[in-house]
Image 1 (cartoon, rainbow, N blue to C red):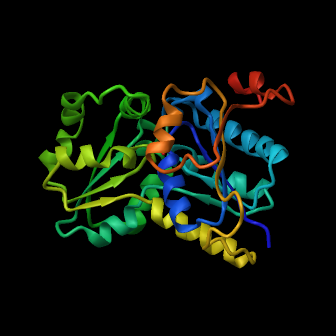
Image 2 (cartoon, helix red, strand yellow; image 1 turned 45 degrees about the vertical axis):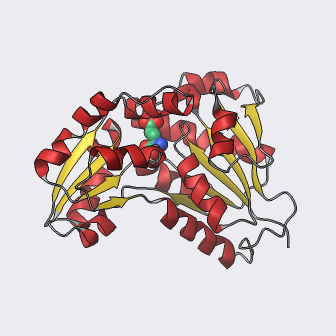
Length: 282
Ligand code: DGL
């Protein structure tokens, strides 16, 4: 059987943290990555715009590549688009939402920090997760407006502003959280720095491995074997950006072991669609 084709979608480079987990768990799969960085960050955008762009870009990507599973590797998008996308698409869609449930299970003191984008911390979806799975916990929410931008710049070689980052994390220190949920796929990329700034946190919850497991499960259900790198050309195939290709991205991909066979490409200007997407008129 041919190698399964997985499309991973995010607003920027954050979904690469998920791509890394998928690459390790499914070494025989073909991965494509689509970053809607023309509209980055999604955390600053209205829900309707995020949802419309996500659906439209996923449809367009399928015109360019066969896709067996779509991974929306973005909390900010997943928390608004998943039901809609699943209703209009005929292949499985895996999403990522803040891992409140595992955090509530792991926390010893019931004090949990949620680090996410300003949009994700305000989502109705998030409130429901807290009600359903962590009603007896204190959830300290930090919806930071700049952290995703700092991480995009860091990938391009700009040092993180550590003192500003330390101040941003201060509410977690004051609340005495022992568990932090990384509610944005950009954040696992700087996990070492976060750990160094908050050494008393015992559990850091990143959803990447769980997403990779769910993707593997859905592919196995469809008869694919992606556990072994037996398909020639497995790995990251194409990395598309709807905006400018970020400086330093090729070197970064290589450093995180995602470089094999990748082609960096601007989003194809077909269907005349990117202009209308930029204004949200889809
Ligand atoms: N990686 C995205 C997420 O998980 C970043 C969102 C943004 O662009 O603001 O939410």
